[in-house]
Length: 101
Image 1: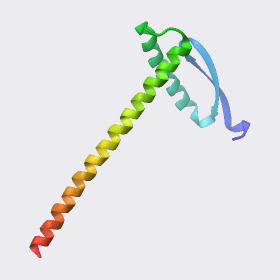
Image 2 (image 1 turned 30 degrees about the vertical axis):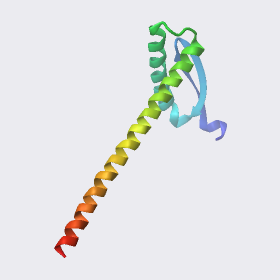
Image 3 (image 1 turned 90 degrees about the horizontal axis):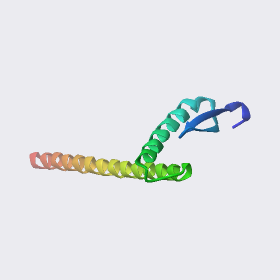
Image 4 (image 1 turned 180 degrees about the horizontal axis):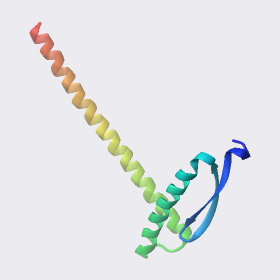
């Protein structure tokens, strides 16, 4: 990626500004991600159990990673369940064809 393809974008996390280079067409996603992260960090700060920007950021990252892994596992289970259901339907259809032959 050349310098022309990226731009500096400033976002706020817990009232502190951070600048990032990102592709020009990704600014909206970067800002949306920063807003989401900021909300999670604010929740952690309001709980009063974690102090310091760095610790709050790490805790938010760990919570988000945990949620991501749970969602991935749930999707895998859902796909496996649907595959079993379809497999059973195929078996029933094959049995019906065999019995009618």
